[in-house]
Length: 462
Image 1 (cartoon, one colour):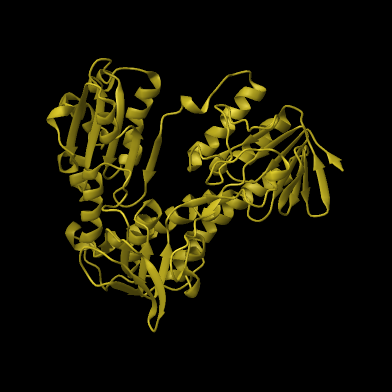
Image 2 (tube, one colour):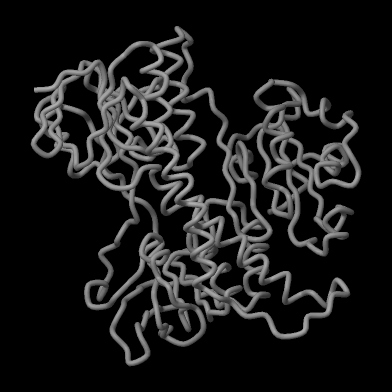
């Protein structure tokens, strides 16, 4: 038995940062990672996909070169090996940085292997038994594999295995019209694949407002992506050309045949092999570890951070989980999960940035609210860049004048939205931004104008 002050399981965004804070405070830490340091973000999520999105964007702009008065000597082509090599260089730098920081920490002992509880405060990893009064779970998640007919009869890809593919699919069929499906779909279309997205719901990104979904659909279809909505019964079968994905939709052929199929229908927490049944740690019906507002589990001294706790599925929420745990344990600062404002982005081109409530959610509250909308064609910076697709929408409480939420779909909106988010955290009225002078020409400069044109929400229709 090896005894430590703390055990951290999983090297995603929250774990390594917490190890640094705990060891700085004088604690001894056992750190367990079974495979790749850096977690989903570094290895199969943000870092590799956004690197590839950048390559796809470069190809897209190159094909549009004539619109900017630029003449290319030959047609644009894609070298997938070079795309992957660039991606892997970026990933390796991040991954190696995380691992070296842990291994070079004299108060941190790194164990490689799969962790499993023997009892509430004893963890086995290989032949080692580790004991600690405080244990922090940061085990992340993986792609959900749905039990749909035929899925075990065909080769299929997940977001992880697609990244390992070194060839360009002739026709990539994507099951799932959410963020992962859309980002990969647009990316591979720009690389040169034919792409079909199949979604069971009547619209893409069904958790967003209808106008946002409609705008995204139009952008994708204009790039030549086939979208099949209202897919009532999705089933897969082998085909001479690859995989046949059967659908029952309002229109179109009964099946889409692709050389490859990507399953992108959600995420599952990596909690099934932790031996939680030997601890008394509570899970919900989907396998997420139940935590309170300070990320404590149902067992004293055990915390859950990141994707495995169901409180957020983003790098920034995982890192904030670390900040909350560290603040409460080490700084006597009572930070809480409920203090954070929902915020995220979808990195299609142009990106969708979202904070707070959307229009449908605001309407459901029954509050008197104000709304402001502007197309990106009214943003000079977007027009000058030749990237004026999308629109901006902001919602405000009519009585308190505080911002309730925003949906910004357009070039640079993933950065511009932080002006609104910071005002929300400050608890300041929207007039703070409305009266601000922003730099011209930028995307952010439209925000004061947007807020200056608010009207009652009841006068707007989705």
